[in-house]
Length: 620
Image 1 (cartoon, helix red, strand yellow):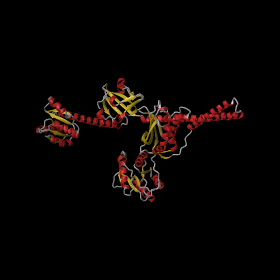
Image 2 (tube, helix red, strand yellow):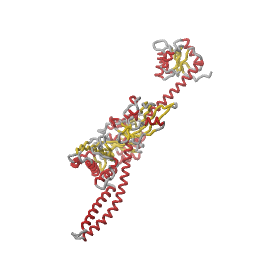
Image 3 (cartoon, one colour):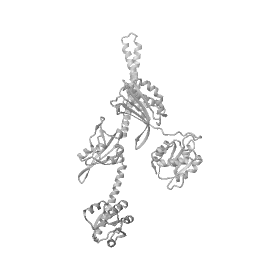
Image 4 (cartoon, one colour):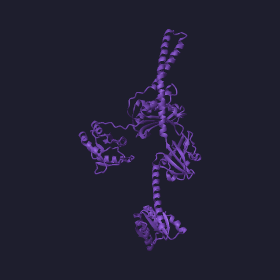
């Protein structure tokens, strides 16, 4: 008989002669018997040293072999083979509870012992591999950004990953066993009708079914979001076993696409309007010139004078229209400055109230923490007035207008970008909000919203319109939030602490720049030693701290202190040895805490630092 590879075996048998016989047989097969014990307590104490355990079901004491095997499996994940002279059904059924890897009836034969050990070890290896693969798959499933929902062949949920939980508002334990239509509530078109069940369609067609292009998901709090995805059936042994439904929130992407399409459309219309208006201005100028000549030749009571005067008036009106078209098609010159939307709104409050009149109720709600923007104040006031006037025009019988400010973030090109927001919500009905920014006529009102949209785009912002749940409409203007800090002298230590961060990775510098600026610090950045030295020399005011990898900090420290003698140094190291060092990897919150600790010695900590409210992100 071919011997198996040598294994460390623990024998658990309370009959001494039988235990000795089993040990002898194992040694003859080439295995190492690490111990032969008689009780469950001894088995649990020695099981950690063994590769496999041979366990008698009937042991002396309060704990028998079945309970001991269950404890070994739970604590050590070791394979257990049961030994017994009892093969009755009740004993077998009870033994299954412990999940044995084999079952040998005494007396043992060398062949059965050899085969049982081989099979148990093989089964144990396969089980561990399956567990590892399941762990990998669970991790992958939970880390996927797309929502994934797995159902059985009855359309009931089996698996719901983290992304699906965020979008639907459900968690795996509560969602398990629920109908997928109850958890994943899909609607389509603007009428809010229930969408066709993609799980049923995928099962019926036995093929991948994409979600309807107008599908919307009803998320937590009743919020509707545009989604796209697919439903794919899967089979086990040829029989339908269920469906995998994947979807993602594309509301932000579609909103951005609409903004881009609107900007492109307005840009094309603007160029066309500018070109046509110049041609018309030349023709209208000729008409007006000849009309003036004719009026000078006709007497006051000439029969043709009235007709010429009408020609002159029409030409004058045409000239005004052409000039408005030219203004719409030309680039707007702006004088950008850092302004507060709240302050801008406060200055315009009286004018807004006078424009709306008594029939319209106006509410203004400003968020004190609204960020500042870099924009032309006059042009932004023009945008606000255009939005308010349009809202008033839709409510001739009266209504309500709510103007509010706040902050927002948009995912653009894979990163979240901060914006300051100003919204105008009104009760007037809009038949087609997506076409509001298209020039609808040659009058002032027809061009006002188009010009407002152009002005916002010129400031790298976004202006959108959408219906509200109550049937009204909401304008939303987003402008990039200004995060810069002016580099002014701070002899009285009244400004934010200045920190120089040296790292060659752009994304790390950007993340820490936003984080430290939000917590009241002026973070200067450099990608290499030369740039760091140049930044330190041109910086107006004292530099409080240098953060860099240890070797770079040592190379820069002497030159830096010649310009900024009081600058502290925080070194990034692999092994931390002091308060002036921080070990990688670290989170941005841990880095901020270490910075605060160092700067507190010189009284340079930012009073606005609030790291406890920030989300940690690991930096390596």
